Image: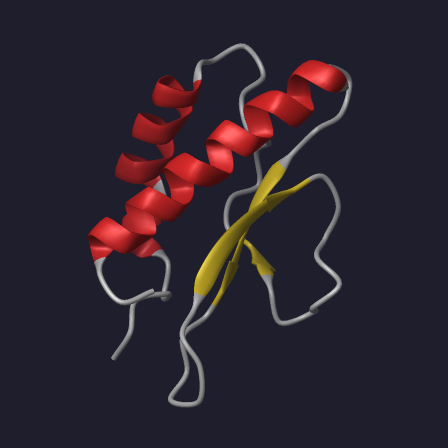
Length: 91
């Protein structure tokens, strides 16, 4: 990710996709994963119910995306508590 704004936009988009998938399968659990930035590639985030196929992705937080919260509530919680600590911004 190039900037914090890009990262926040990606989180918001991911949560909107999560909301649709969660509504279709309310018993599924979804988690936030991140890909660390290196000199060779930019980092990123993804929301999945299972670990991504790319094993370079790591779990960003142990708890699942809160099913009882809105997109905005999850966004605010993740942005303030987790997002800033992830090593995903470009050098």
